[in-house]
Image 1 (cartoon, rainbow, N blue to C red):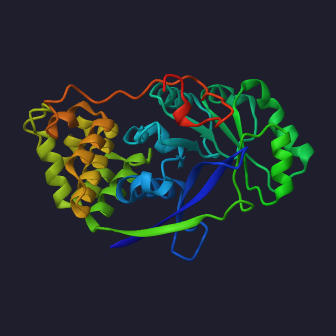
Image 2: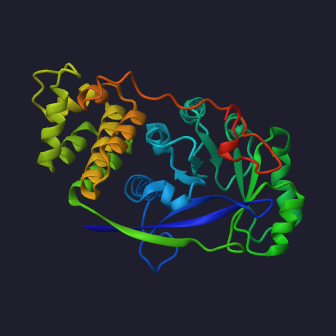
Image 3: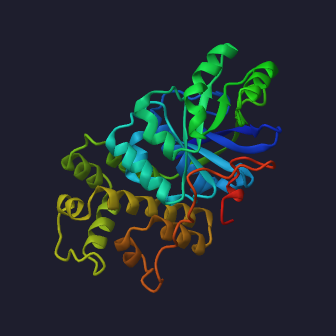
Amino acid sequence: MLDIFIARQPIFDAHDRLFGYELLYRKNATQNFAADATPEQMSSDVIVHSIIDIGLEQITTGHTGFLNFSREMLVSGVYELLDPNSVMIELLETVEPDDEVVRACTRLHAAGYRLALDDFVYDPRYDPMIELAQIAKIDVLNRSVAEIAQAVEPLRRSGIHLLAERVEKAQVREDCLALGFDLFQGYHFSRPEILSKREISLEQMSIIRLMNTLRDENASDTLLEEAFRSDLTLSYKLLRIVNSAGVGGRGVQSIQHAIRLIGRAALHRWLALLLVSSIAREHGVDAEIVHTAICRARPGWCWRAYGARHSPGPPRAPSSSNRPCRTESHPCDPRLRSGS
């Protein structure tokens, strides 16, 4: 069994009202900073255990949850397992705006999800992503008012909302407010709060490791085959589903053939659904909750294989405008979307 620790740090609006929480990975219950984990591991652990195991609603109390996404997670489309009205996809500063990333952001936006750019420093190369994003997070720690003003000047005409992060003093908050910032986060308001720990089974750890391997663009089919062969149960399930009528791959006997037939994207979604089902069984979650998660995953062959063939199809993500509605009561609030 493995203990996973989740922390949350509140984000406030210009009127000091709670807007949401950034969800953060923590190594243990006392070490209140991330360590010894890659961005991909930190992000995937936070998503898996907060959304599926602990419950996003319980962590965020109905407010927006900011979730860090690496390039691999964005491109994989794993966000499809999340409710677009409940989360803000926070793209890490290490993500370069290449064509594949811009296309992924376009798909994300079209599906009704919101995007924040973490630790943002303006560069003209990011213009396509600025058009798709709702929030730019600006690190204001140890920066003068003039330096902060210079950092946000290129963003003013875009209409993107500004979030000041690492605010440690009241005066910095006031200076940022005067510069037009909408949202605020930092030690001045609250340090990250470690909520709880959850134990996950060896089966779930095996699935998570395979999902991380699938996100590695350099991982060969041979490496994936070896990873599957290390877990006989998963190997059996993979061959069984590939040979089902819903997939049309009858007669497939090898793991490598199964991987090539399904494709990595669909295989990643299937593993995510297995993870949901495993945790649901372990914690006695109602089957309808699992069914909803399966609906949101939207891989057509998984629908049939998991008994959803009598359903009319996965629910569509709500439509959204390019920018969240600005109102006097709460800018950026997902409940104030046009059409809500």
